[in-house]
Image (cartoon, rainbow, N blue to C red; front, side, top):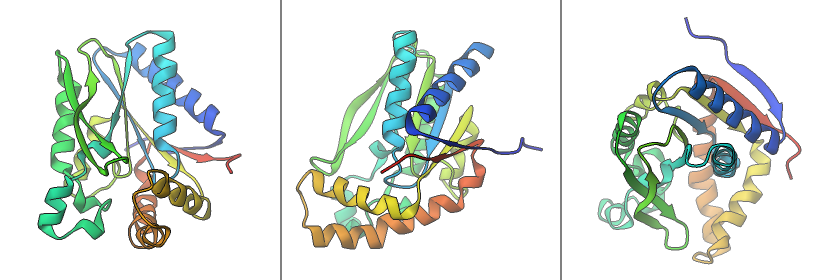
Length: 225
């Protein structure tokens, strides 16, 4: 029987500090590489928390941690166009989920430097070899919407994680953040961005929230704008 889920309400900085502390404790308790997963809906601040946790770990022990974003496994824009699924971009079926699971499995057991992709909002596409994990890196902070989905191929992620964290921010607060994020690169109109949020982002938020119970640690973010 699995342990009961731990549920906390924390400010973002406290959440970051706690995740870094848990990662250090897990790494100290056992040999090998440690994978910490940070999941949650779009716009909840997962990437900021993940990056800052990595920075905290590396400040204590340089080179000990790396950030691994799921977003690098978006299907390429050309493939989405060929499939006719551009309008769905961001939904689970528009990711290379099987490749992502395999990438994490490779990272977990790797004894060599491995590079992987990231996603650029400036060009709205994948950029190869922009994530580097050195052989000596002990802790990987993996971040993405769909780390805790229970269907194929995503169910393969959780068994690879030593700690699965879910970040929650209320749905109404997420909308404004998403509008800002989509507008930031200046690639689309406000009308397009509103339509995309309604059609893709908020349904994804709801889907991800339905799987929050699979996390080991649920953090309700407080003191947020």
